[in-house]
Length: 290
Image 1 (tube, rainbow, N blue to C red):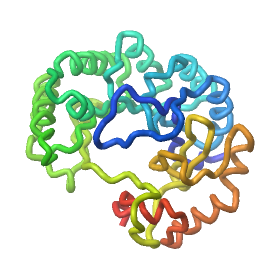
Image 2: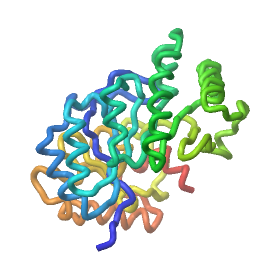
Image 3: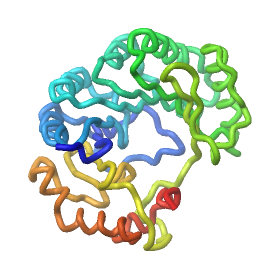
Image 4: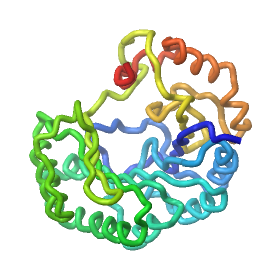
């Protein structure tokens, strides 16, 4: 059976150790996903995808069961794509992230300056660079992305991000252009499978925002879907509050949820360039697919 989805986003924690200006606060009850629920999820997503992404909202390194979750992914031959701000990265976590289960690890470096604009990032970057160099040696097949968004941020963080860019260039002995137009280039190869990833901020979709239109398309439910920390299945990784609950994996089989009338209507709408859900009609990110 062919794998249907490129990835499935699993929110193993909706709590975060930071509060970034570009990442809205989660209004749902703060939770850590249990091992029992995680195993139930992996059992059902394994036939549908080769990769799960430990990311929707929250910081995955906050979950105390991370080591067991990695073991479960190995058990079901599911690879892991993890997104972290890297602040909690210590020796134990670094060893865990070298596990063969991991296919890609992304570090959101821009989160440090956004939360600690006056703090020296040397120690923070040292931990990430040390892990990266060890991964380059021990896990040459592992993709690592340094995310450095908002380089031209008019609020002033661009200077700090440029400083980080210089530190990356010096550490990995790679010349990096500081005048990057993120509209035309999203990624720069540093060495082996290490990349620098750029992007700009976007407004997270919310039912409180005005309608932008009812035509458009999205990769939700075709390339990916999300499962929130409480088991709620959502059509995409930007439905941070579960505004489009398709079902609860603790109460229904995942295949029934993905084949429900609501799920089918959303997917058919995207195929016909029609946004059938209120949240989708208020989503700025959809404009990137035009």
